[in-house]
Image (tube, rainbow, N blue to C red; front, top):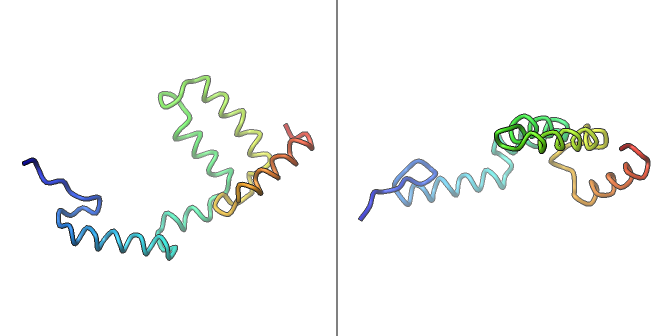
Length: 106
């Protein structure tokens, strides 16, 4: 047949796994998960620094790609560093970015 596979909940019991999943979803929807609460306080500048440190350096990315990311993040941080990452809406960011480019921040 094969070997039993544990659910992401850490249990092999299907009913228990579903119960834990429901609890996680309710916690997420109720804004109770610690990861979500931490993310709400994250500024764009903090996120950008984290991205460069964890996902942009070799061997994850090529050295040239990392250099380009640093250049881009430098410009983006000039416009968005103090903004709250969680609450930024795409249209607000797009408008702010356009204003920044028009004012010559680059």
